[in-house]
Picture 1 (cartoon, rainbow, N blue to C red):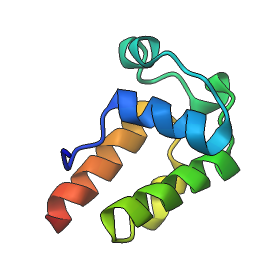
Picture 2 (spheres, helix red, strand yellow):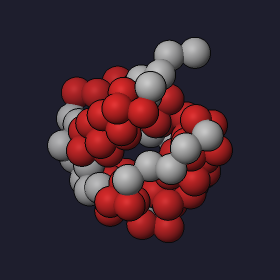
Picture 3 (cartoon, rainbow, N blue to C red):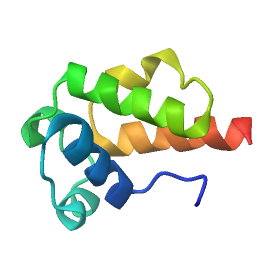
Picture 4 (spheres, one colour):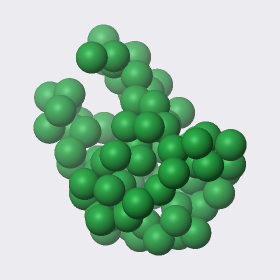
Length: 85
């Protein structure tokens, strides 16, 4: 497993954690589209953060659950994971 979270994994987490089906290709082409456009609210994002913290065995930065777009979230999570590797 890679230590970098990608768009496809984020889409899978959105489906698993919030029941939201998102086309990963569409999200990759429009990474600055706000999560709310996809139907993901702050509670759903908090669930995704919790899932990732369990998966990687370490806390993500507190601002992770306040990210507004997939690009912002992936950059923050991946920078955090790389710093902790």
